[in-house]
Image (cartoon, rainbow, N blue to C red; front, side, top):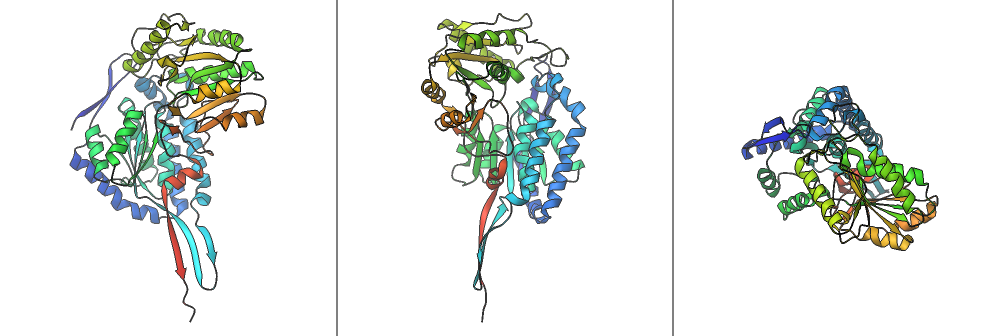
Length: 459
């Protein structure tokens, strides 16, 4: 066993610690989940839906405690109210579509045969959730997995150590059996060993590219399904006919909100050359108006990054870019302490030779480049190892769709950014990973097809 420690970015102090489970104790947890799964799956679908939604409501009742706790653990300003809106929206949508998504597929019936395909739960689903949106990213899988009849074991990121405990407590208080939904604290070695011994029936991981690769390596040869959402370098493209004010407001918010620590945050922006100077001027004015500070202060609009090492990586990318000729438009904020409190930054004169335009930054920095036409923008947007979302700004829907068809990405936005619609599949390509959450496809990934070919006795 070892100790997991959450260091608060507010002041660098230890906020919470938890002891990890031993290998034997973790195996007991999994055995309990497996033993509970058949009875859970045998419950009527509506019962499972009702219990899951009661658990969601119980989280909502905790929101006044959750919001400052999140600020303490990962630095998001309390003024933004936490994640319950998106948490409830996603769970509610998956509950609403469950009956149709999990319905049998009728292939045909006549006097001789009845044929159909059922969607049946995998069994025990292992969810490894990240710290940046710890409630919303977890519920993406937890709610539909439980509704579909799986049991769920949740392992949360150390930076948001208390989230899994809160979720388990809420769901248990609502009537979800303790062995059906369990929170665990595990170290990396135990996690890999459990995966390698085929302990789980499906794994969903959201995190770094390296973490996703470790999951896939551990699962190699077990034939366990692994769904991943990994790194990103999401682009925005502002076309010559765009609503400039709306584009600047949305894309800069998408780049800077949550201190840039968003899975689908905007990390690079391409602007038609006719709008470039105006876009940059407006963007700089917005960012200069931010208030960096303690996330518990109601006046703070930009909190610290979740950990000093994350801020150090962003500082390094910015410094390297400036040394290579990039122009930094934002002076260092007085509150920037060289640690987790990091000044936001807008860079121009950037190129794709710079890490800040290639590597995931996951912080409050964005590079902006002028482009002459759609072809150049498409080439630059696709010049990335990642592919999660792309945000296109134009008044022409057909043009956006045509450009979108040529972009290597999981989601194409038009005139919006940094939003997860639970009716659409949340997915990526390239080094962003494989799999799909939410929507009917989320249910397909959390179940397996089982075919029935029934010959009738007609003597």
